[in-house]
Length: 146
Image (tube, rainbow, N blue to C red; front, top):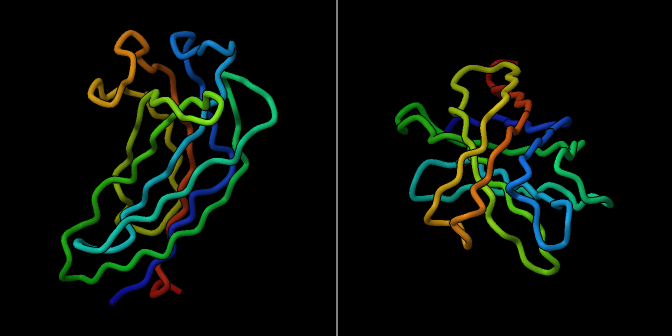
């Protein structure tokens, strides 16, 4: 089995539109990153952005996460890496939208600026459609490339 290291790192920025303002005023968005780390039926790995001290529609998360990805050459290519955006409302999270990027098949560094799209089946209030952009950098390297 081939081991690869996926790094989702610093400067994850989010710019969301006014439609996501909540009853508490400015939004406090959080992003969950879901990386398919092993071939099915094994699971995915998730990471959440840290809580920021201030409410803003344009947070910048200086976070670095490492994922160990294990796929063999016999496995199907991994599904996309997904990002799900929620607005923190006190002790609960309200779904805003999501974005995804293709799983990189070659080592390298990738920069994405993604539109946030809402899956209406996940919305608690169909009038609050998420809009905006998510900027993220991915760095992927194969242990076998070294």
